[in-house]
Image (cartoon, rainbow, N blue to C red; front, side, top):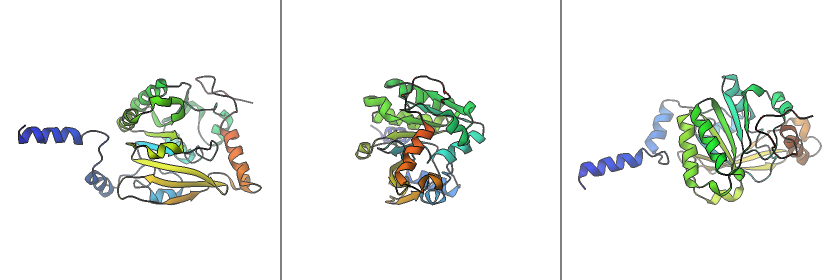
Amino acid sequence: MTRTDNAQALATVLRHPAVWRAQQHMRQSIEGSQGISTGFAALDQVLPEAGWPISLTELLVNEMGAGELSLLTPALRTITAEGRGIALIGAPYLPQARAWQAAGIPLERLLVVDTVGLDVLWSAEQTLRSGECGAVLVWGQAAGRALNHRALQRLQLAASTGNAACFLYRSLDAETNPSPAPLRLRLTPHDGGLRVHLVKTRGAAQDKTVGVQTFPAHWQAANPQRASVAAIRAITTRRPVAASCLQNTP
């Protein structure tokens, strides 16, 4: 193999979406590249792009209703205000229409896809690539074993192609598995709020934990655990997802 062949082979490898280069991060910093503000100043300060990246973000959480949806609400409002949609794919519960409206998310901007297995990943990838949605939320448990490293790479590439943020919910057990996602956060409920631990970020390694208040103060006054229960009841119903369209529940 000649020197030219080696150079071409190296260039091909470096173009792969799973490869991240330090000079790329530096160039983004110099140009002032920013993500989508999280709506929480303390969290924006520790994220490399001062917000959610236009890429794949893994949210590692075990407890449903811990504030994992409320954490994204400010960014989702920003996205819909810009005229783009939001997709929920493989959600474990039926979204509560009134709660989404109360959170400032127009229902006409909300797409709900009820599916499992490989179809979860296919739906997510196609939605991201379309460019119609500014954010796609995916529940990894619904994909099951189909959610492998290759599938994560495809989601990351699709998010970049469609200029969208992809949020992938996974269990805490996934933290020990390698992932191409440039941002991985561990979410744990604490004192009526949420602790966000940076597991992986672009740039220099950061072992930081940020506390955010995702619930209204009056939800937390009596008992912090009630806030979590109230949150999941507000955003979802207790029924499994039964339809591919958003349903207004009583």
